[in-house]
Image (cartoon, rainbow, N blue to C red; front, side, top):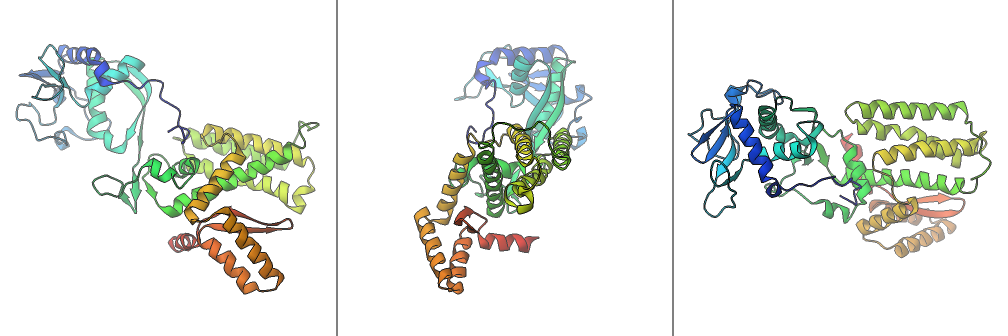
Length: 400
């Protein structure tokens, strides 16, 4: 999570440390007439809570009992769920007014969120699979304990799929974040995840991760070039910028504000980066751009807004040059090459071009492109950068 630049939670509570809160909440639900005791168990009565189904839109007659266990014949309604379970031999237990036992699956979340956030708070998150029964039951028991209980926004994320099948241990088609970060930069993985709206399923594939990796290299390379140019002009910059640059900045700012305010629509923001990045590259590298008035002021203003947006998205590296080096190293690892080997190939290609052996020169370029290494020719010589491997590029073209 640290490598992915996810902010740490303010509190990471444990259920076992909050047993008094849980027992008190169950007592409140029972006292308010929304739960009943059967031997040493306590069940929530869904029929006593008319709003049951408000989150999922399910009707009471459509609901099946808890997915995880067989229907308990002692329940008044098959959809009733356990708030407290009596102790079974060999299981951990705590003392309660209903005898020794442990909390049900749902009550612990209601009790701990109420303990830290109060009965009303802004945002509750979770996977799509938790809408029913887990979050539906949380709403019911929280409102049964306290009528003022309310969550303003329910944020449910889609699943990661592999070749359009849900990633899961049972299917054996899963891999861990650590395994992915062994071959790809964590911020490339973050960019990949943000490239799909959080509520939608996201299809994991090598070509999409390679594409995110290439994209983030381009972003950081552009901003690194900015940094180098701006470091030579840190004094005497004017406050104003040309109207055309201002238009690019205003449009990007508006796209960012509108999209993020529209249920955190990150894919639109990432697409909107293209214009300011292209404008920077034109100003830095094209003949026409280099002649523009207040060119450095434009570059500085564009770099600033891109940096601000990347910071909000958690995509700002500690250093552009360090991130670029890490991206190169990971591309080499995926290509199973060393930098010395690439430099040797560049030298061989230069020699072939001198000798007008263009067939050999093209073959070397193609061999490197095949494993995800792109060669860039310029007046200063040939350099290399990570790219989407040729077979994956062809796969991408075929798919579109």
